[in-house]
Image 1 (cartoon, one colour):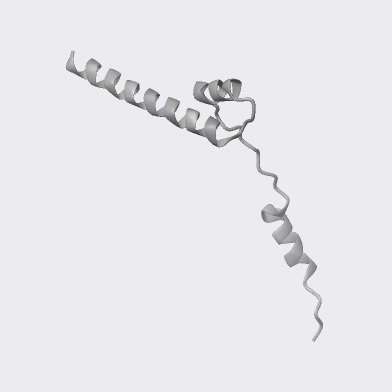
Image 2: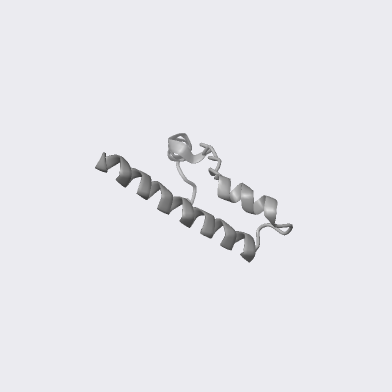
Length: 73
């Protein structure tokens, strides 16, 4: 018995997706991210992350109230 692999099996495995490159998707940055980056000298930092979290929390509350007001009308 030999330890060599069948070349057709290796070729089939290569064709099935061994060399396909995945496209990198850009992450979506929102206004809170850019505001925190502009406000803080050192980015990323705990302070900048906290600012982003607070800003996003405020935005989330506003969007919910706008949707409720539209439904009531």
